[in-house]
Image 1 (cartoon, rainbow, N blue to C red):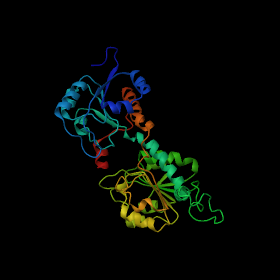
Image 2 (cartoon, rainbow, N blue to C red):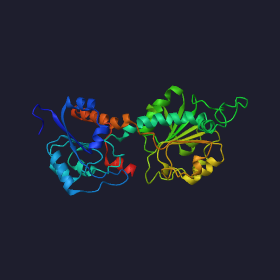
Image 3 (cartoon, rainbow, N blue to C red):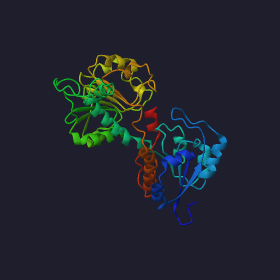
Image 4 (cartoon, rainbow, N blue to C red):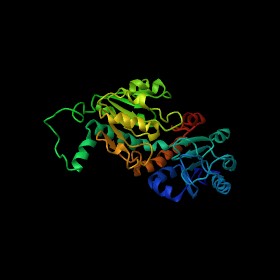
Length: 356
């Protein structure tokens, strides 16, 4: 039932460590203006690369916790939410996953739908820092800053060779006015488009799941993959799925034009690593990579020695702000739900099929 004062009941199930790192007291205060909030600690295994391990005892405990809730939120550490939990939660109208990478590994969407429970997912909270880092990598690549950093730290050169006034880092080194290509135009691509707007770039995007109206709203031209790969700066922004694994192989990477910058903040497995190494060996393309396959990058990988490559250790989406944004966005969804509004990040069976 609802709380004594008529407010809704919202419960969060996750590990104590997740609660400490993800939940900001200010967001709890926002939520508590409209609902009674409670937390239940769980310590189950959590893996975003595979479905949750089933634990009947833990699921029974979660069912008891959810019995009088209107909204159940889960994250790392929580047991699987399936029929047994949902049967115990007769009042439930909203189920939220804070950080599930949109693959529904910790919940049964079909079971929720059968009971009229809507499901939302806020794992796109990491799109903010990832978009920032992607834009930063583009600037680094256009200036060929990785090569100059190597020279300076090796104490081989501490001044730009102004006498040359040509070559990578000088010719076409400004982002303003460039043609930008995006492979993928989901939450991350749309956030990046907003950050690129002050530079007056033109943006092409390849994403078969984006409707023209969305692209038009962001001033983006939907394009074939070959057209996107011919841009001045190419961003890889798609998730790793069975359909995107290895989607950029030798033939695709050959379409990168000399002098362009290739930025990958997606997943390493989206790009054929062997083909990428071969393409970069020619030295006419600059790559800025936050991800690689395999990870961590082997210390003997040639990718670490190329002067036309800048690397970072998969840090694009890892910030303290993004961890807390997951819960903040979920509070927004809860308040929207209580006001009778549609969710902005609904997780449906169709979305999961697309991702899988």
